[in-house]
Length: 106
Image (tube, rainbow, N blue to C red; front, side):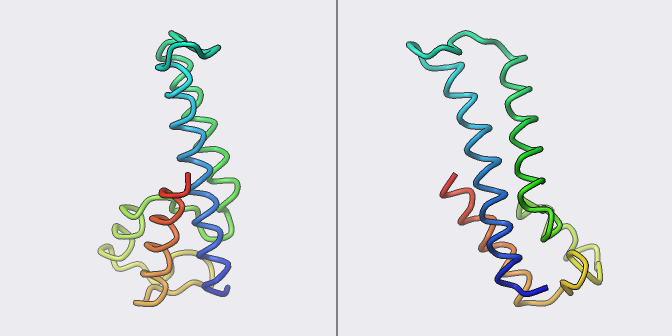
């Protein structure tokens, strides 16, 4: 798999996770919104849907969505991050860059 697909997959998946998760928290916390005082159940469901959507969007790259997952696989000594994506310097920085850019955009 090309690193460009991995990069875009991680960017869109992480952005989706961040956008939906933080959006539901803002909806519950801010006055004047329809979800104001929605409670913890609304927040947990919103984050759950955000994780589902992020993993669904980033499935091609293994859906790390978090630099800690990538770092954990690197430290563990895994041979591949995802099918046909070997653990090396280029793919590690591709994952890190995609996840950080996606978090910023989300």
